[in-house]
Structures are given as structure tokens and as C-alpha cells.
Image 1 (cartoon, rainbow, N blue to C red):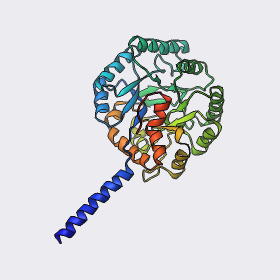
Image 2 (tube, rainbow, N blue to C red; image 1 turned 30 degrees about the horizontal axis):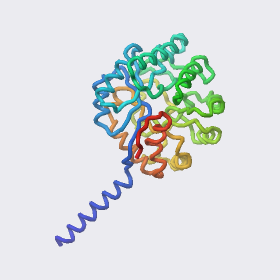
Image 3 (cartoon, helix red, strand yellow; image 1 turned 60 degrees about the vertical axis):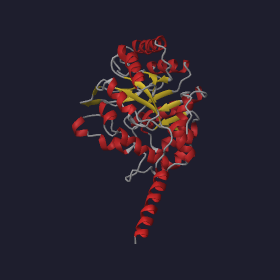
Image 4 (tube, rainbow, N blue to C red; image 1 turned 135 degrees about the horizontal axis):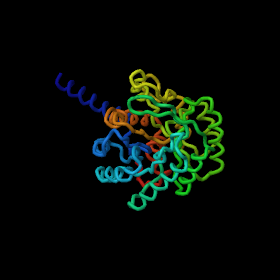
Length: 329
């Protein structure tokens, strides 16, 4: 009887390890876009980055323009190089339609100058806000903006990024601005054709539906999707009644059992170079609540993909597009 119990325990332990190895992706993770908001300190962000197993976080600053470079340097020092700098494009009122566009553009150029003077090896620029739904809740008061890729300030910002041969990260909301979705999709194809050697990355999957995603994949070679805020945690954590008005067009790539939907899983496996992992932590609750759980959740999701696909989405694509020189494995 004793030998039988030992055998069963050994068999169970072996099975657990095998299942765990098969269902958890243990490779390097690069968070291709996160942000530091004004409601969390440099010390708190650094602590969370140090205590979680994301190998590298590409980080953009929010808040006061004059503090951005200093805040990044502080976090870089405290995390011992676990972050890389994305110069913010949305300070100086860039995403506020009543603010002077030229002042905002000058602000981007000033942040670039500060980075160079501070000898910061920046790897690119943060998201360019093209469309953003109005916000009226306890974390953010914002009137919203609805531009397009031909708008003056958007073209000027894209030109700055193009000069540095960095990926152009675009924030468009195809669901929150459904009436303009066809126009934005067509403009993405146009800009892709105009700059075939550049890479365009769409934040939050652009709130895109599967049919629209297939359209982009078919008609472009260099427009890619960032996976941020497309997991079930986004839906579970959005308490609309308490927080008030915010975006409502989020999509999720996952089913009710928290597994990748078959249609998205197939699309990723068929187009492994077109998806980039990111969490886009911004507010204090993004960094301090459920951060570890969301990483674990995505590791399970990545493990359900083909191994080569998972490696590219988790690390390889960001490594290539941002020229990070990480040994992805």
C-alpha cells in the first residue's frame, strides 16, 4: 500500500510538471508599451517592474512635460536597466483638440533633445493619439479627440518618428468611432503603401474586429497589432457605474473560459510577425493590482500558440521593430 501511495504521488507530481510546462510560456516577455501616470511614484513603478517577470518594458511618461526625462532616468536607475525609453508624443496638449498643434509638436522635439542631452538611448516614441473617446471619471477628465491620419498634428508627429526610423505607434479606436472606421482602415493601407519599409503598430488592437483585422493583414505588410487591453481583465476591471464615461469599444481576444478565441488564435498562428505583446500599464491600479496575474494570464495564452508564434509575439517582433538587441528565447 505504501509503495502504491508513493507511486501515485510521484505520477501526479510528474503529470503536474508536464502540464505546467505545456500550458505556461516561460520565454522572455517584452512589454512593448507601458506608461507612467501622475498618480504613481517612480519608486512604486520601479518596485512593480522589479517584482515581476517582464524582461524589458518600453516606457513612456505622462504628466508634466518638464518632468518626463527626469522621471524616466529615475526609473531606469531603480530598475537597473529593465526599461527602455519611448519619447512621449502626447504631452503639451497634443491630444487635446483646442491646444495649439505646433506647440505640441515643439514639445515632442524638446523631449527628444532632452533625451539626447541626457544620453538616454531612447528606442522610439510612445503612442500617437489619433482617436480617443471622452473620459469623465475619477482617474481622467478628458474631452476626447477624433482626428485621422491626414490631420496636421498627426502627420507632423509621424514625420518626427519617421526621421528616427522608429516604429510608428498609433492609437485609433475603430469601435468608439465606428462611423469613421472605414476611413481609418483605408488610410492605414495608404500610409503603409507610402512607407513600405516602416512599421506601424496599432495600440489596443485598434479595437478591431476579426474581419477588419483580416483586411489589414491582406492589404498591408507593415501594419501590426499591439495586444494591450484586449484581454478579459480589461472587461472585468472596467466598473463603468463607478468610474463614469470612458471607452466602451474594447475588444477581447478571449472566450468565456479565458482562452484565446479560435479565430484569433488561428490568425496569430497564420501571421506571427503581425502581433506584438504589451500591457500598457498607465494608472496606479494597472501597476499595483493584477499586474502579476495579467502576466501569468498572457503566459498561458502564449503557450496555446505555436512555439514560433509565441516567441515572436512575446519578444521577437518588438525586439526587431525597436532594434532592442535582446536574445529572445
